[in-house]
Length: 258
Image (cartoon, rainbow, N blue to C red; front, side, top):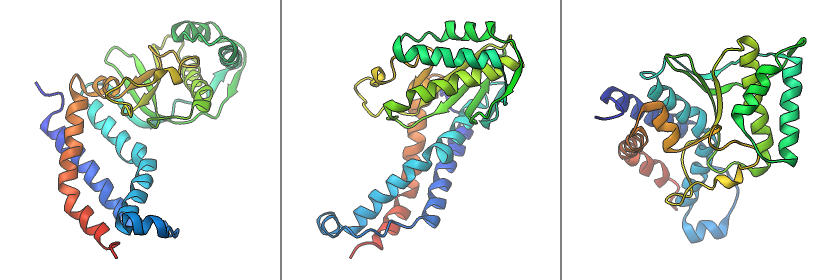
C-alpha cells in the first residue's frame, strides 16, 4: 500500500512545479563579474549555480512547508503551517526555561521529558507577554498530542543550537501556560540528510538537544507526517516534477550561453 494517495502525489508535484515557475519569473542572477569562473565553467552553469543557491533560501517556506501540510492532512486532526502558538507565559516558567538553557551550556545532558515536567511544575506567578516565533508546522493527533516543528536547513550552524533549544522550550512553555495538561512535543526537523548514505552527524546537536525527543531527520520527519514510505514516494514526486520542468530549465539557462 502506498503512503501517498494519487491525489496527494499530483498535488505535491504541482506545488513543486508552480514554485519553480514563479521563481523563474522573478529570478535575476547576481550581476557580479567572475571572468575566470565564466570562462572555465560557462556563464550558463554559473547562472544555474546562483539559482540553486537562491532556491535553497526559499525551499523551506515555498516547498517544504506546503508539502508537509499536504502529507499530514489525511493523518492528523489539525495541520497548520506558520502556526501562532501564543504569546503568554508564566513568569516562573520563563525563568525555568532560562535555567535549563544555562545549565546545558555547562552540563550538556538534555532530557526533554524531565524538562517538560519542570515546566509544568513552574506554571505559577504572573503572566508575561513573550514575543515568540511562528511554528513552521503544527500537527495534532486524534488523541490530542501536539507536535510543533521548527524546520531547519540540512546543516545548521552549531552556534545556533542554544537559540533553537530556547525556541523549543518557549513554545512548550506557552502551550502549557494555556493548558497544563497538553501533551506537547516541540522538535527540530531536518528535511534531508546531506551526509547520506552515512548517518546524519547528530553529534553536532548533542549537548543542547535531546536527540531522541527533539530531532527528526529525513525519513523520520516525512514518514511521521505521511506514513511509512512517504519519504521515498516524496522523492519520486520531486523527480517527476523535475522531468516536467527540465525543458523549461534548459531553455531558461540557455540564454546565458555566450
